[in-house]
Amino acid sequence: MRALRTALLLTLALAPTLRAQQPQSQSIVLRAARILDGKGGTLADRAIVIRHGRIAEITAPPGGRGDVTYELSGLTVLPGLIDTHVHIGWHFDRDGKTHRREANETPQQIMLYGVENAYITLMSGVTTVQSLGAPEDADLRDWIARGAIPGPRIVTSLRSINESTGSPDSIRQVVRELARAGADVIKIFASASIRDGGAPTMSPEQVQAACGEAKAQGLRSVVHAHGPESARRSAEAGCTTIEHGALLDRQTLEVMGRHGMYFDPNLDLVFRNYFEHKAQFLGVGNYTEEGFAHMERAMPLALNVFKQALTVPGLKVVFGTDGVAGAHGRNYQELVYRMQKGGQQPMKAIVSATSLAAASLGLADRIGAIAAGMEADIIALDGDPLEDPTAVGRVVFVMKGGKVYKNVPARRTATR
Ligand SMILES: [Zn+2]
Ligand SMILES: [Zn+2]
Image (tube, helix red, strand yellow):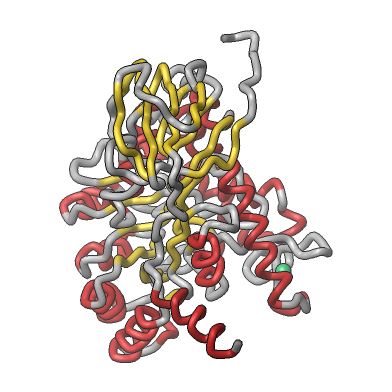
């Protein structure tokens, strides 16, 4: 028994992080009148044929026979959404406060909150998340990948690196340890939290050690950076992505663009969620009145940075929310805000949350598009987000890895 368990654990440990869902022998056909392919294209009147968890072919109707056929013709069909920045385990404790170490929760309870968040996230149409990141993410990721627990595909940093990780040599050592422990990405805090003013914290040498060693280990590096200095250091160190960036100027955005970086500004949901749940965060760590005042001031700045960023050549603006406790399953609200208030063209917003987000995770060949050979991560909306951005919040069908997790009738709204 013990040997069996060891073997099982070993198998899980060795399994690729994002292996496909359990293959299905049957074929599934989705009939769709309107498809956004995730790469900026649209298709009309197609049958998407799915076998073994992947899109086998896309044909003109009737599209052959499937063992199971789903009629999605009154809907908009698109790839599952990808949120490149969440904290999948963050939750409110039983007393309503955001999770604290001293909450005396069991590891099992902490894990079950993660399971709950994963379920809510998947049902909202988000089929992949990057969690930045906690040690608990690893088991959640692996158990979801086995196919029995409903949740999005998870890539995780497991932990993060900051100025107190130590000398460049110590930082390289920690990056190697994280790679061995199965981290999919390295998360770096190169600036303080916006609640503490967002000033740079890590030296250029520390940032170089972190992103340089990540690259040597074949991993991407994403950097929490609010201001110009920390973002510039990250660009020069070859880091992959800048997170937040509420205090950036155009010049720095252009440097990031020249380095071909990804930029994930979090301009709405993270702030709004904090304001809505202020009492539940206040008094924990840097969630102080002063910290909240910093966030109030940062919100309009973040919106302006986003508008600027959309016009910077070479800069790849991706979708991410920094979703914490209270924000899981509402990821789409950030996307709606980017379209309605940030002025992003709806098609570009959809691409930023599908194929571009997939590319930012190094997964462009597997997810983020509706095309033959891709994993069948497909959702359907009641409405057309190109005409009505709020349609991304009306997810009525969710398939991940060829398995249907949600299929509810569309509401008949007066506007349709
Ligand atoms: Zn807790
Ligand atoms: Zn975060």
